[in-house]
Length: 129
Image (cartoon, rainbow, N blue to C red; front, side, top):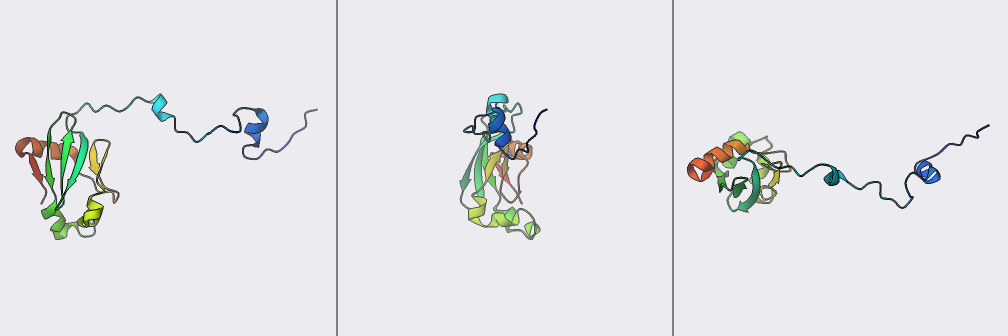
């Protein structure tokens, strides 16, 4: 007759020897499995540089670069109560990051990279108002 025993947490792993008790089971191995994302459309952003007065420079995957001016937009009353309102604070505005080819802030605000790309291709600057 087989004697049963209750196992708790890592006891089962340790007792059965599936994983050494010193193994780091929390390691993210996704980079070993999935290839790095390569954007195939030209309007994906690759870098952002924050400038004074609610402006920044962007570069796209095809090498196109230009400036985005959000000063008038952020000064308007239409951003009150939206995810864009915190961007009025220069420190918060400076937290802009490139996330999956778009500009995004921790508040959840983001900008459409295709519209940004089209405006910059036409005039080297995208002025939001």
